[in-house]
Image (tube, rainbow, N blue to C red; front, side):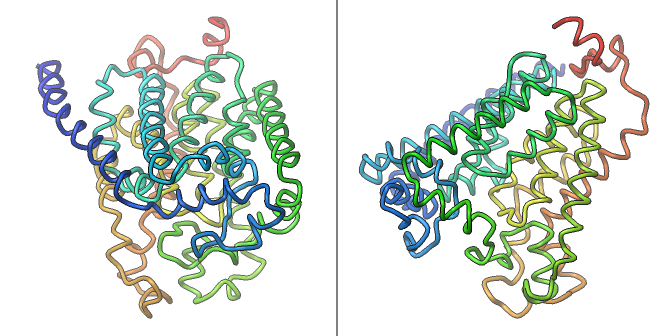
Length: 393
């Protein structure tokens, strides 16, 4: 009966997925995605002294690493529209790859069509396509690398490349260290160093400016903007400005980072690497001073954990929140009600942040339950105890 339901769902979702893919193609050909245009212009500017960070591109500052800009020198050689179409289709392939890897980590036999079609309806995912952002590539690289690390296979290159593109995946290097995947951690750190040095050789002036001044300068982006669903973004909106937050704020991401990585390491110790990955991804979003709405693609493995564990109500609520993105329903873009403490508006305006905190809390509390037995739920959920996994390797 259940198998028949899945087959019917799969048949129904195939045309839905086809429409979604067609929509991405048409959108890519007709809409000038802002972030992709900035990436493309960055590919043109990377070798032009410090222009990459000294001048605005498409009326916005370039905030990614010099390595990211060097990667775009190839796409910059193409006209904008073909380059954008190629980027978006490759981003779609990366998302499919990320969904496939997530399914492998769950140990569940679920049609990939169902996961991809449902995932494309999540706001962080379609918003990534809307902006022409890099998030789905980072998600795919990290998931594939962590899957290899979970199996005891050589890993680290994907995480190193992802960190060289955007610094936030670097939290997975720390996860590798605390879970004693030392070789993989050093491989990731070494890959990051090689990519960064390569960018320095190609663009020395831009690299010096970025690493000495730009990468920690949050004034180049709109911290209070409603899309920033980090603790710093929420506090800046509530306190009406970054100047009011103060140096004491450093204790918040530090505490979240330590607690989140401790929970992730505990799950990895049980052999549940999907939970460890999801917890670390969400922790990285809460530690970063800037976590735009489209950065929250880590909702995909997080939802997979909840569904796999039988927390269907929590998974449904999370899916609804991240599909509807209610913070965009609240006043923003400088509206007076965007700032200050408002009892009813505040939870909605910071819904991604609150969902992230609730997920970490849920995963920490769930650790109090005894580990799943391999012959029972553990086998069904695709979880392999650490000692047995190491013997298999």
